[in-house]
Length: 508
Image 1: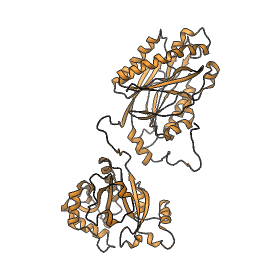
Image 2 (image 1 turned 90 degrees about the vertical axis):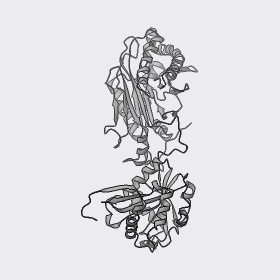
Image 3 (image 1 turned 120 degrees about the vertical axis):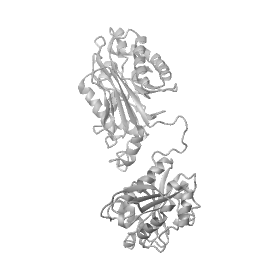
Image 4 (image 1 turned 90 degrees about the horizontal axis):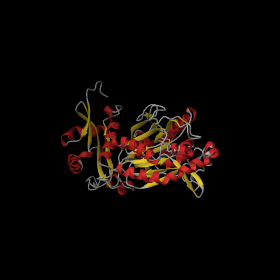
């Protein structure tokens, strides 16, 4: 290694680099009889796929390179030899419409190893794969230390030991540390590779942003804007007064180009004031008659304000049973209903409420979401089932009377964000409602919670409202960060579950 380095540069290969390229290859592949590409072969590569040929320079000297072609996935993932995949070194196998970046060579001059220059080349390949919207990077990696163990173990056993860090292989260990996974073992891949016993490991890195058929319009957004309503309980003269106050908040958050607006659980409770002479159970059943007109009005708001509305929740009667439900009113005019599944002892005692029986997620123009009402967030199984279906954002409308109750919701919501690698948005009601039995005090603090890793806030909180004050909270969440977390996070909670020991499943 050089005693002093002044400059490191990574760029596309140019034919003028050939002389230095050849020298570096000779140093890197001194164990092979023909260790370098001829100039005409490099010229051909540059004419076919110039953006796929990379070099790294130290003080203006070429010391490493990564060469690639494009091929279709079936050809890249099936058994092949190095000679076959390169078209007998003619690169006739290069397919401009191929969805795989196939790595045909990567090397670093031994005098410059230990500087992590190879990692720079791999990172550049990954960036190119994402930029070109390719499905994956595939290549066959040598296992140069296998010859030392070939009499003791099979290639599969060797690879397993390298994967478990029981053995070190200078090529395979490096590939695995760069997020490549093993597809298969291939025999007779590279003629003359004695140290690998002519075995190769077919490796793949998946592009998590790949879209098979990219859209030109109505493209799914990465950054989603959430608007949360921290609703002040106040007397409402009638249903029109509720609509007027609701439209105010919808107008505000849509004015900031929000994609969703979330209302709290049972925010329509002030309408019970007219029925306060009745028992709690009868009063809440009376306002269940407002459920249908509220749903219809919020559908209109969703269309006219171009926003997806999560209507918090409201009482709903079906077959004589009282449920706590809400609606996802989409900006395309459609709607879907969700139901509170877990009912608190208070809701059973005073209202005779029953829990729903459907666990589901919802497809929206901003990705797949889940919705759980208040107490439901304290049961981790629900959100895990939703996460298994691809949920990216979990919305939790809630209603809590004391700070103790709110604390349960808050910390359970934060746990759901971490364990399911998703965003969780919560919104509740604040203030007092003296003329409505069983609904007199409220405490809330709307918030957006995130997973806990380097791409997210260190405390796992994207945004929080002022406690117990009527206001809106607007925050952006980036879904691409979740994709990266799932594949490359410090911990990978969804991937690392021991499904061989335990499973969670729906019963119906």
